[in-house]
Image 1 (cartoon, rainbow, N blue to C red):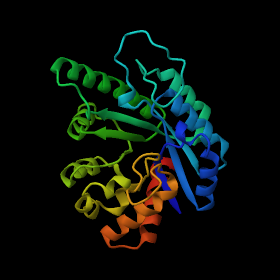
Image 2: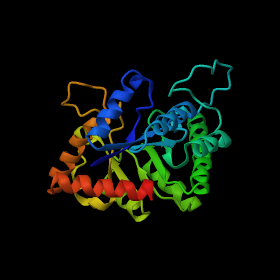
Image 3: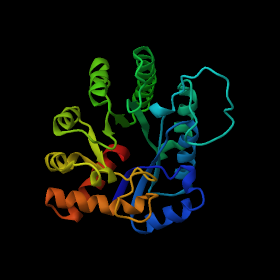
Image 4: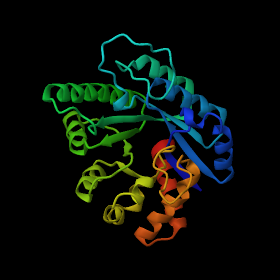
Length: 274
């Protein structure tokens, strides 16, 4: 069995083939968590999860790049995973958690994204401050509902560590799409977090980190539709490609693929399903 702890079959790119892909995944014993990036995609993830008796779960949250600082009027009637939100409306997300019941297994993906910050100091600090403000609100929601967190962290590892230490939240979770070195990995491991690895391991040299991180702290993910393994012709990634991640990690750690599959699935169930 395999457990894709981070996919986005709730995204519009999968609208036509979503059910077909999920059926195929479940027939191959691949479970998944579809992760929200704003209210619409979170709602869609919950709706999808509730359609299936087992093996399909949801995470709800507001992604840092979907935080809107633009005060100009704009049309917000369109519904997709890229719609930005000026504020984190806790009640709306709490209602999603209540509606989803046990199918909602995490708050995420939430965190910090410093990838494309402006050069102007004042504007940069404004964005970082807003990301932190909304991040903290979502951590409180996770704590309130006893849910783990799926952390998004791009170019912001040390900032995330600083915020977590400053506020000392009692939170379980996973660092999604981990790309740091072992020094950074160790800091997250010391806090009890898992590290998520996906197809980016075929594009970045993360072998030393994967070697050193205990298998007991690794989760598998695809981040579908993103980060498809580069050797595949199909560039729209799906949870069906999780097997390639398991195989690569097994080769790096010099253990059997079966051991990777069993342990990472056990890890996922422990974190998300209790």
